[in-house]
Image 1 (cartoon, rainbow, N blue to C red):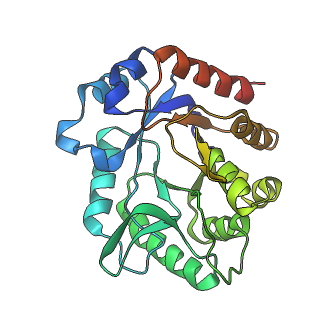
Image 2 (cartoon, helix red, strand yellow):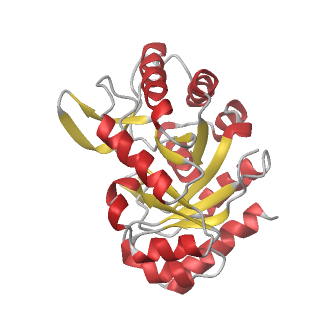
Image 3 (cartoon, one colour):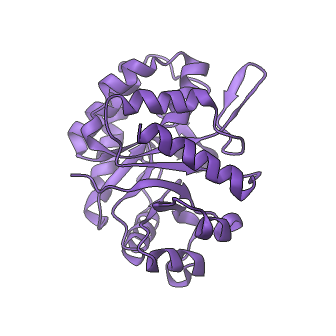
Length: 267
């Protein structure tokens, strides 16, 4: 049984005091690459002392890339998981590096069987070095690679079947892909193995020039909460986490967004 996490928020140094005093924060997530194991922020240590789970979330493993996974990045993620006694670690179904270049973005993986084989091999290569289970997240994209052989849901389902990972479902990313690429939300949710759900991300975004951008710097749209509700209709998610990475609003606004998320989850 996946650990019950509740409703949480992404811990960021810009809102450390806010996170400490916000009501109804059951767990937090930290960006793994932004923390040093030997010098954890006092705020993160305080949250751990309160018994609040801290989950490291990586953005740079590049598990969908053709290059070998950097063992130093894996070692850092593993050490951080042990330092905060995390129940999970996570990253994304994406690549960020290719041919010695770093994109600076989470690039979607071609949904071909060859690309799936590469992803599976990379995941299997790092699992023995992680002290806790790995969860991988669906990403937002502005394009789809040609010649796809699998829907996104089937791609993730086969990934789980072959690696025994957990899923971190980002309903904001799913909404973005529905808007920009025509992804069928119901089909995606029906195809993924929801019994392997670790937790869920919710975030805000904005439309610009006809495209929806998952900015993490705007309020969560009601339509994103509708996607969360569609997921909730199928499964009681172990945890749901609000992400905010820029243009931070007032404590009251963040508390209201957490309350809106909780209302969907507990309905």
